[in-house]
Image 1 (cartoon, rainbow, N blue to C red):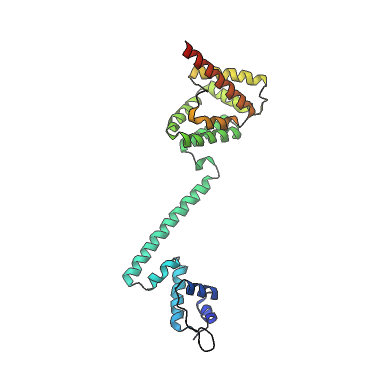
Image 2: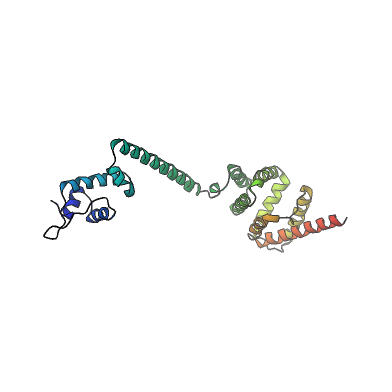
Length: 245
């Protein structure tokens, strides 16, 4: 007959583990003998070894009791189920690892490959990383606010980078982030951007549910805030004048 300490040492677990198995009902707790000690027989040692073996194999404690008392066919079926469950967890962990690896580049976590290609194209054109991150944020917002507009937006953005004047304006806008809002260069840039919007049929005053995207752009730079405000005001005036005609 063994004391709880001897039983634990024999099986290679702690006394605390034995008591936990008592608590959850996996291992019966013997009555105390005349000297006040609980004594464990050889069967208790066998049962504890079986419990520990299943636990070490990853079997949840809640399922161990059923497996200990299962017939051969039932035990085999339970093992098959556990294996399938472990495979699902492995697949899930593998997916988590892939997504964590994507965090190294940031944008790959939330954006489709077509947008990643646009961001990489911007870098190749010489756009600053700060502007690339802002572009990334606008695509993330667009995907959340108007996912149906993503494909058209991707098409238009790629087309814009095929146009030399659009690329020039994009690069100047990038440089202007650190200009004083009332720098004379800003006024010239506003004129160029306004002419571009007219040529391309754009209207900065009609942002609709994409207002948060324009807000994200404006908050990046006081200069950009002024540029967007002036462009929106001019576009609104043109639209109003057109309605009056």
